[in-house]
Image 1 (tube, rainbow, N blue to C red):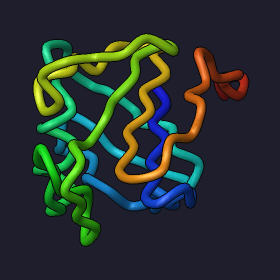
Image 2: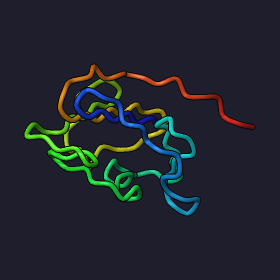
Image 3: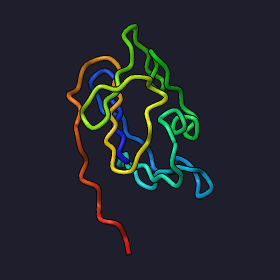
Image 4: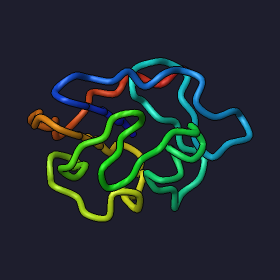
Length: 112
């Protein structure tokens, strides 16, 4: 799956090295591609493994009186921390200024 984060209209890099080989999810590159090793994971699991906050009015170190918005495959999503992480999904999370969400992501080819 692919995740994009925006705060106040600016893109936030999702770093490589989130999670370990024993975690149910991880990042290997700073591209927003999240590798999933288990099903039934949700967005809150990613932020828990990452050790960063995500709540109704907070995204990482950014806060706003307006709520955090999320989109899955270009469609508005509810229940922010409960958004399912599914293979092939494009998830966009925004706080502050609106950035039109992408509805898809061209994943790199898998290594043999």
